[in-house]
Length: 345
Image (cartoon, rainbow, N blue to C red; front, side, top):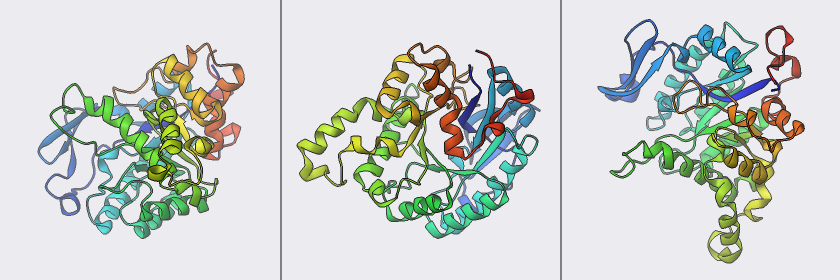
């Protein structure tokens, strides 16, 4: 297969300063259990076990080589966004993690591309931290799909997205802060049903909230997890826009008009789902994503693309690296494997 650029991976630093003053008693911290294992805690609650691949560039690069991945976008773990705190406190947290991210990717700047986080609840602070991070070496920004009850069409978020567009900074949207209930807390149902629904809702907000009508197409924005349930239900949205325009006709055009305005990643795990995704948004709007290093991610990276016989060579090249080069502003030499190899076929 052609060289691969993975736009959806995460990092966790191997420790950070005490954040209790900024976040409160449920502040995240890391319990180091061994040289290669640690536990993220939120206050006294265990949140997620991680391994060295979350913070160690050498481990990450070995896995990339094994999977034929030339380049990774390395984004924050959404649990650390801190959108519930004041803008000032969240900005401090963002600075800490953004600076630590640069240390993680420093051993391989040609292969590991850092994306920053920002205090999205405070547009001015978010724009300042974006500018600081880009000046320091970050290449893009990851944001959560909502801030409390405010979705991506809220005025503050739109202001931030407009700033990203003006700076030509790519934006990666990841679901976070998922709803909880007795029903959703079984079987990891938050991840299996709420994450796809949250992502779908966020795309809907950009469309029906009129954001795409207000921001020109210089905005480069990508949604995680294959756009969630959006591809399957585009027809339902389209039907509602025409059939109940009095309620949801809040965008200038029907939903299908905006398909060329955003990217999605490919981490859908199934050839049938990938076919629907490509048929819906277009081969020029899908990029490889893995959710590395977390256990619900795809390994080997890009496996669903490798085994999908419906893709022709041109579409496969767009998805594996061509679209990501455009999204990230890369030139071809930046995305080569060591030694100029292009990966297996």
